[in-house]
Length: 142
Image (cartoon, rainbow, N blue to C red):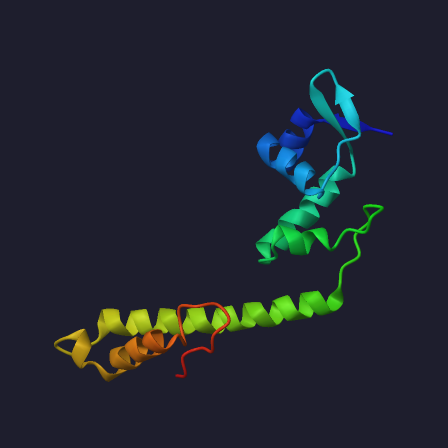
């Protein structure tokens, strides 16, 4: 079995040593021993780190990512959790698209003042009501 010291894991994964130590404290990865003062990891840690990175890029918290790994360390991905996250991302995308479109309109609006622009006023109202700018809220209707 091939073992990698922490420096090799850093080099091959791009994950800083401090993050590796943090992940180990959180139980996301585990070292198999030490070589001198350096932690040693099973080569499978690279795939595990890739799964963690993918989960984080998708917006999962570290606690949510931790649920993906069984006690034996094998990944077991909850398909409903993936579907729920995809729905959450859809909502975020809609909210961000509405915000982007509002900002583009405000930048090019021919009104003398943004406060006189009906589209900008609607955007302000949506922000004041919490419809935009907060996760989990409904998106601005177009």
